[in-house]
Length: 191
Image (cartoon, rainbow, N blue to C red; front, top):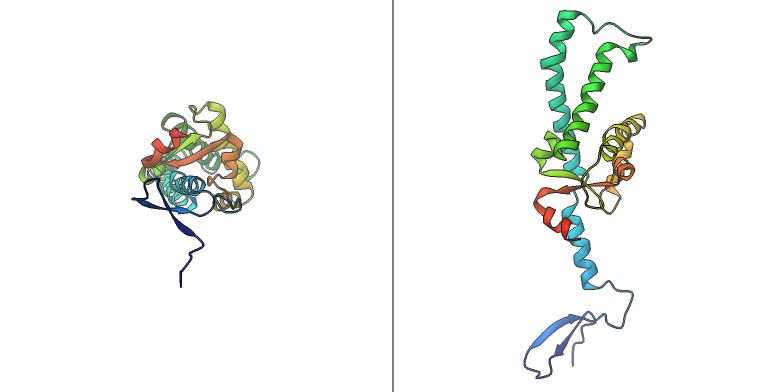
């Protein structure tokens, strides 16, 4: 009795001396082609997922906390300006300076280095989807407008990265950017 495997069959060259296994999907258009499967696996490797991006964000928050503790707290203690507010407590001088440092850190680091210190530690970086250099518009929409919108909704829009193919967040869609792993950047630029 002959065992016929439906997934694989043996095909022989013209001289029938060397056999090579091939997928038996030449006639069935519903099964994915081998090139498509390889491309999907490469995409999973190139783009940074939610976990590594979350870790880099936590590292960035710790760095910003250190900056706040080393720079702003002594200034507040010396000048007593942390209690000053414009209209409401939300618009206090302390809150405005914290927000200024927060957004400047992300905008300037992303523009000049394509990564923050947290991303450097995690070995990931921001790239444009069309593989061109980041512009000020891209960076401002991603790091400033995108973060404000995500913060408005309790940072829940960051969870979108779990469900998109390239692990793009809402802020990545605004700026048409992706976050890639540095180690596989050469694959990203091959297209």
